[in-house]
Image (tube, rainbow, N blue to C red):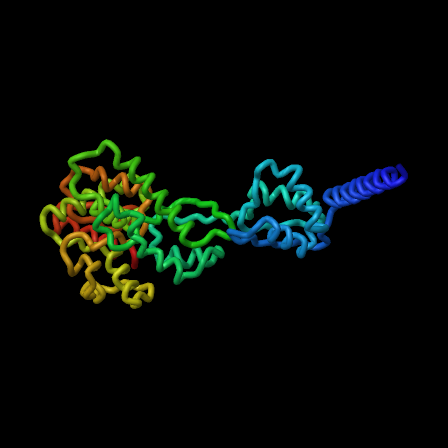
Length: 334
């Protein structure tokens, strides 16, 4: 009888001590822990215990045991999300745990402007902290992401859609790049839907859109510029698009910021002063408006255009008209 009573007392004490310890652990979860701001990166594939150990080392969790207690009671089937997190001074362990369980990671906002080429995109993304320039340049070879839409595409130049993006701070380059290509796919599908009997195949349309994007930012001119290039293509005329020369020089590492008449003779397949037809691929990432213009070029008889003194461009039907417009433009610059 005495032994049984002794066992009961021991069990009661054990339960009491366990309860006291649990209450103590629980109370620490609601008190600010870190005295300095903390940055934490949770890599994909880490176990729950490994994440708790990281939080403990960063003074965001009083103990692994406390963290496991909270997860057992309140995780509700949720698991930690990988990514980059930042915590202000005085963050409580519960706040830290909930942020990771909800996946409220630090975000990076990046705006890619219309007409950006892959080299420019690589610089911008690297500056934003997403990968390296070499990694981004390598992404241009992932043509399998677009093959079903553009089977003849030899590069992803032109298919990283210009837009404002919000990426998780620790996002990898491939994930970010694929998201941008998927955005192109969505926009292209919307603009392309319902249109038939187009002047060229889908890759030709995107290539032309990139030329339009490079030539004008005036909304009312895009379809007209597209129409000029389509007219020249139909007549077998050289497109003579200056931005393709710039792109050729960039490809060759010879661009110094100045376009000279001598550059019109550069031997590069993208140089439309030397090679007939459209270049082999897009020269930049066209926006929605340029894509729409390429899909629906203006029907007119213009064959030439040149910058106008007051902004925009002057369009001409004959070479004589064009030469006069060029003279006016040149005089306005003196």
